[in-house]
Length: 467
Image: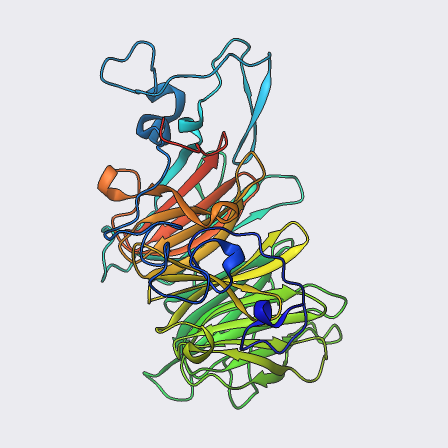
């Protein structure tokens, strides 16, 4: 590995295989700006080019198809409707994925064009039978967390967590509310892994009335009647001193759960089969402000990535069951972010492994397996959420949730260009900030301060050019 690719701030070993183009890159092989020039093409504009203003998507999606599929998109007989031509008719009985199961398309039905690549299959107002009101900055119904789970029978369920203290499970075939569970306070985090649902929330402490602390509770979804409560000790019957922003489970012979709190601590909990509990194993200390995001990363070892309000990303070596060392810290001084980190996600490109970070500084950064920043992309606003999905051509697409309610779709193999924008400005997005996103098999979900759950289904590859 050359020193030019390795950059500063590394410290753990891995591979680095440059695969991106455009944007602001640390290396001339990326094609965006050569050396780390913040004025190079793509850092303040679309990758590879100059100019000011907001970046515009390089492809166009059909609004009618986005909102209602074929029923609302009758390009052949709807005057003033869809302006995009259909492609050739497919062979009989092609199958398209629909959340919860396949949908057979009748023989002779036109296949969608590339402008009909995406359809919003759910627009759910997240509330229970007794809930009232809508979304907004102060609404108790604003949704702060989302995750999805496919049960052993193959049915898909979506979980949402809200400011009102409820986590809710939605059936992905009917979008009906299947279950809601009331916690003792506002929910900030949800995670499903290996059939277990983990919930991070803010709840009261019995020790000091009127004071809230960080709580974590988990359920084995095959036996949810007996949840796990995470407690530091008998004297401290809670998980964190302050609210819990994120949870992550390591699935192994000895399962571990990592949780991040507003006080800046990361706690590692290990499963004890003898007592059927998750006692605290150790603390990962170093962040001085809240831990907002956790992500597991594997490259010549297992690592935990943690993003924080202190504007840093820390990389922790977690292979040792008893000791978790900080292998690297990425800051503004070694190509890191200038504002609080809000999201971390993993990205695989062939045999190469990368991780992504999003920040309130509006920048999406791509890091190689040595801890060097390979790419920086300016987005159209402060970033609150990230995930990675795959469109039907098996190309990775990065889903970026912004503070203004916009969801950006960016494609890594062509320089993280903005492929599509899902925005309320065009009546196809959230009206409040996007608080969380997640991806499943053929779909991705977004939730926001507007109290909405939106689910987006891939039905065709994204367009390469405007149609």
